[in-house]
Amino acid sequence: MRRSLIDILDLSVRELDDLIDTASDIMERPFAYAHACEGKKLATLFFEPSTRTRLSFEAAMYELGGHVLSVTGAGGSSVSKGESIADTARTVSCYADIIAMRHPQEGAALVAARGGSIPVINAGDGGHCHPTQTLADMMTIRKEKGAFEDLTVGVCGDLKYGRTVHSLIGAMSRYRGVRFVMISPEELKVPAYVTEALDQKQIPYRETASLEEAMPALDILYMTRVQRERFDDPALYEALKDTYILTPEKMTLAKEDMIVLHPLPRVNEISVAVDTDERACYFKQVLYGKYMRMALILKLLEEPAVEKPPVQAPKGFKCVNPRCISRTEQELEPAFIRSGSKDAPVWRCLYCEAEAARDEEGPRA
Ligand code: NCD
Image (cartoon, rainbow, N blue to C red; front, side):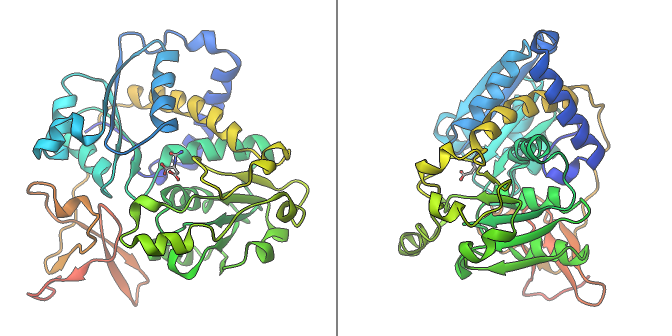
């Protein structure tokens, strides 16, 4: 299989730095890259709504001199006829050189990468992760703060379904002196696999429900939208949707050099009046995102094929996450990764990272 970007941790710290350097160079000298992907095709397969991410990928490929093939909405493709993700990826591999895929099911991009023969970029898999948004976030942080070390990062809002938060925490947790403050209502706390990884690396974090209380200590405030489309209970969404609204008054509690990030779209969690505050960086993120995607496309098109990593399939476990791709994908072998501590190991689904349950026959691993 070809090297893909499924999880932000697929990139080393060095590679991430190199991508930011390349993206900065593209920004300064766009003409030098205007023909870099001549004759190459990007397929954007978006089975979920998107404005920024899809257009950003498409603009990126056009600015590199390449072409774009596009599928939007499951209704417009054979996925609506019941085609598997692996078959879709194998088919698209015959037409394009690289895929950017967004899908409502968690783990879908990984299945596509294993099924096809061209690089796959995960443009969001359900509530799981969104590594290219993190590329945009990281470039913004480096440009605004100069470095990634010794920062207190506040993430606020829907930390349960907000896939951009999961990827950002993964990326930032690799730098010395980084601390996290997770600001959310009880119902929208960050998933266990995210905190488990922080615990394993002994990275400090705390959880709070109060934005005002958290604000003074933050160097970065990452606001998120409550992800209405992922709620099973519309009444719960209604009850939680306005939990946090960032206003100019609340901004007075923050450091003078704190930056405000948001992956966008915003619904109403940041008042428009905050946009003119110099600390508001969310539209810069949009611009940087395009250059980072250009750098990523260039990198992945150059990377040689890699051995398909074998999957661990211990008997006696199953994934019970209803949003996981392993629940619907044709004949997909269940696969798990060992996590947790040495004394209390936990098996997690390889595709969605939810904790695996023991099946009725009992564990045999
Ligand atoms: C985010 C997403 O799709 O997860 N948007 C984006 O890609 N910029 C955030 C969101 O939809 O709230």
